Length: 162
Image (tube, rainbow, N blue to C red; front, side):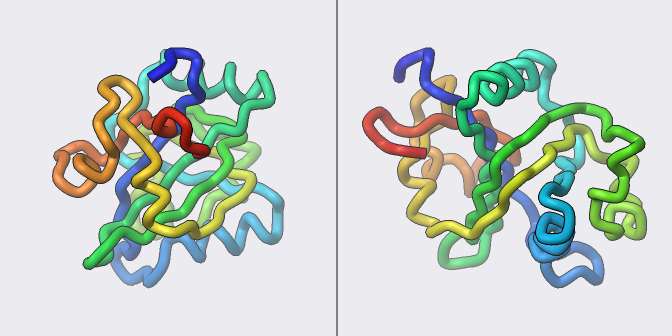
């Protein structure tokens, strides 16, 4: 895999949270109203090197995606979002761009990394077959369901569009 190939983020997530039927629809409602929404990754944050790389790609006009994969047997439900910004700290002035469930479920203080999304669409689960783990070249589908990790830096397979 070429080292200059665009990198993207893949998160495995839970479609529903204590009383919430669909976390994606909560984000899409704000996105439709405001043109952007913050998505929080709970737990261990991404490192500064990854955040910097995402910012450099975005600044260079390279589409950088957040893939969200929820295990819904027999296959994943997959969404792809454009990352406008990635940060460890949610800007106070943009709190209105975060779905209320982050506060009502106690998740707000547990978010390690925030992604400001400017687009969020469901895509076919087969799209995951076109991605590899950036560091190893391992096909995403061979690790996303079985890895203890819920976060991956991914890249398109050589010759595949993201």
